[in-house]
Image (cartoon, rainbow, N blue to C red):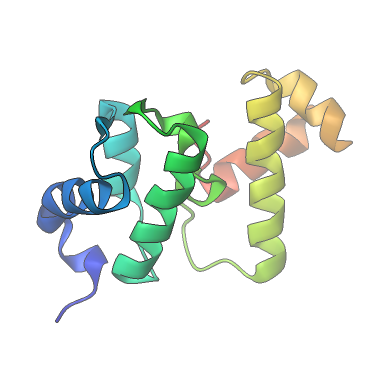
Length: 130
C-alpha cells in the first residue's frame, strides 16, 4: 500500500473514521483550517502518526470543532525537506512560543531569546503557519 502522503484523497474519510474511533459518542470534527493543515502535512509515520495526532488534538479539545491550534506543533509547519531532531525541537519551540504569544512574533522572539529577524528566517525555513 502506498504511503499516506501519496493518498491525500483518502485523508478526509480516514480522519472522520479515526475521530469516530477515538471519540465514540462525541460530536467532534476538524475545522476547515485544521483539515487544510492535516491535508498539507507529509505524514511520515502514516496512519499511526495521524491517529496519534488526532488523539493529541482530542486531548486539547475533547468535543466540538477541533481548530488548527489544537493540532500538535508538528502539523503547524511544512518544511522544505526532512528535519534533524534538533530542527524538530527548534520548530516545536517556535510554534509553542508563537501560540503562547497569540501569534505576536515580536513577543515570541523575545521569549525565545532570538532577534526578530532570526525568528522570521526560521519561520520561513520551517514553513511555520501559526
